[in-house]
Each structure stands twice: as structure tokens, then as C-alpha cells.
Length: 281
Image (cartoon, rainbow, N blue to C red; front, side, top):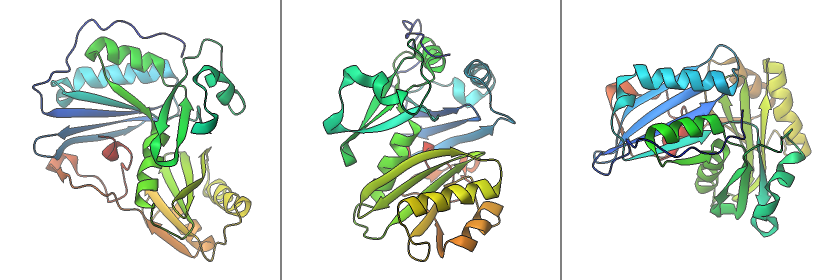
């Protein structure tokens, strides 16, 4: 579904006079939308939609079009749009080793890619690295047609930047786990440095804890010492939390560091849900 080059925009609803910014998170298992009023620093729309099963990029585009056609808040004028691509088609490269002509080479070791795939990258200044990835090009094309210019990033770019910012003065090893439906990301930081980023699919709580403990073992992290910090779609009643607490002594929930106000229609479930989209502006 990738490989299509960007079309020339025919209409442009992104306008200088609007005081609204829209962020859209796209994955094969769901869509999220968030609107920020820049003037009042208020989140006035927040909507997270999980699909019942993983869709293909064509089906996701159809869902996205339906939302734009049916949701009144999404039909307003925007001063800017950010699109977050959430998939496993990415890899991290140290800046010193990065060459823009070799994008396909970086991805081919851990992803099946086609010669027609459109590959791009985000620079992550905070740890001097580059995130190489394949975006959902059909989604980008549709949004270009509808709005004209917009910014897009990979989900993991924002997640890693936020966590490294929060942990830059921390000494202890910490494992962040961001949970979304049947997929989660692990980010391990120690002394403010990124030690590991990886993404996993899981079906059961046993799969889930296996990947966490295996990662800890590989990095020689002692479950009596390191801190396990959850973000995303989880709470203390969740079976994933319960099983993690059996195996790891220190388990916490992250706290978003933002100063936004939230309208009644846009209250996040808790302090650690919607972590990436609310940190994307």
C-alpha cells in the first residue's frame, strides 16, 4: 500500500487565521484525533477509536475519510496538522552512521520492504540518532489532497523524545512500556541514555510478561532494582499490570508533563493515556 508518491494538493484548509491545531495518530489497529486551541492552550477534542481487528492501509484510509466526513470538529479550519504514523516499519540509526542514500539498507534487516516503498526519516536530536521508517503513504496522499502541507513523524520519534527529556537527569535504569491494544513498545533508558527501543505484538498476558522479562534479561536489568513505567492503554486493575507486578518490584505509571487545559469533551482517561498524541504539538 506504500510506494505512491505525494499528489499535488488541490485544496488547502490549513489557514493562518485559525487558532486550532489537529494531530492524527494512524495505525492498522486504530485512529486517534486531538485538537489543540493554541490561543487558550486547551485540548478541545480528543477521540480514540480502536478497530476490532488489524486492518490493511486501504481499510484504514476508508475509516479516516469517514471520520472527516462525519465528525463536525474535524471539518473546521486548522492552522497546522501533525500526522503520527504508528507501525513496526522503523529502525534507529546513530547520526554518525546515517547516510540518506542508504535508507532501504537500514530497514531491510528487520523488515520486509519492497523496492517501491517510500522511506523517510525523523532526526532525534536529543540522542543524536535518526529514525528511519515507512509511513502510510496512502494516508499522507489523502491528507495532502484535503489540506495541503502538513507535518508527519513516526510514533516512536515522539515517544523516545518525551521519555529522554523526562529522564535526562535520571541515574536509575528504567523500562518504559507503552501499551496500545495488542501491541506495545519497550524503551529502556539508563543515565539519560537510550539503551533499547523495540515493538512487540502480543495476544496474552503471558506473552506480554515474557517479552518484558526477556528484554530485562538481555540487558542484565535486575527486576528487584529497575523501574517499570507504564504509559498508554492500561490501569492498575488491568491483568497486564497485575502480572507485571508479580515479576517486577517497582511498577509505576508515567505522568504526562503538559500544561494544557482540557474541555469537558476531551478529558483523557488518566495521566498516562494518549501519551504520544498529547505530546505531539
